Image (cartoon, rainbow, N blue to C red; front, side, top):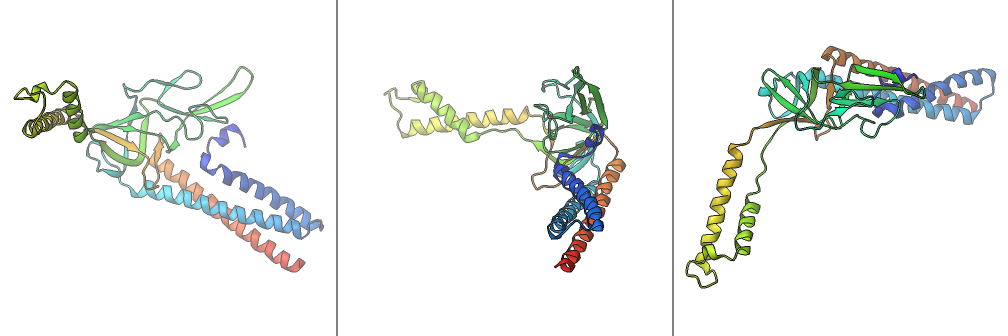
Length: 305
């Protein structure tokens, strides 16, 4: 399999690809060997095991493609500014977040996300880089956290290193049309009210409590202690109102916690559906071939026994 072809497979399917390739090779050798009478029960058992593995891989591919295709088809597209909390599908323009440090690919090209193909870079192996980036449409914007996503990027750059090594990267650039299917939520400000009250009381006690010692006897009686606590509560309430008043809601898109598909793509929904349907077809084919091979080996083993 060439470097370009390997880029079309997701890392999650690497084991299934290796197993199916080995199974096909073993099956071909088995046909040659059995026709010539060189294979016996041990070889038939090995071929049966590979056939079962191929059928298992086929079921995995079928489920993988079906689950993601149905998610793309069934979840309606939402406007970011009007999206409900939960599992949503949005489309828009990718952009860089000003507060996030700029990201550069291996050859120095600025981008929002990249994934190396053929080897593993420190930040871009497996499912790609994890730095967040933005998506916006005419109604609003959201921050995308790409960790754990299935990313289907059409921007693929290939080049050769100084030693002749071949490199390839999938990339997402600012300005790309982006499709995201994932968990949508709105970030709320965090204000620990009880911790704020406790911190004010700690500071006042450390300062000597002079502010609340009304009779100046050097100690706080029950009424003075109560007044101090009520003052801490009032000031904490005022601080909370200020935090809430100055907060701008932030929309977030991330991997669903319930295991549903998380997809980021720079390709059309039709292209995504075709891609996942291809996995379904491949899965059905692999399952049928593997099941037939396992049954055939079982019959031959019965005859040989």
